[in-house]
Image: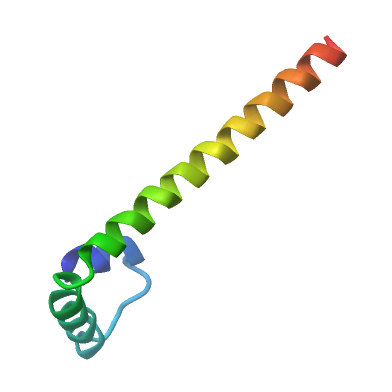
Length: 67
């Protein structure tokens, strides 16, 4: 629960009943669907890498043209 509060920051607070609900959903569904969650995180990492790579290639092209 404290991790979620740290992620949201000190200015935003989440009521304890909502934190309890989030914790319960993670505990109940996380064990059953952990493979899907892991796959989603892996695919998001791949998408982020592709985005960074395309920005690098475009930046290199712009640098080559104008320098």
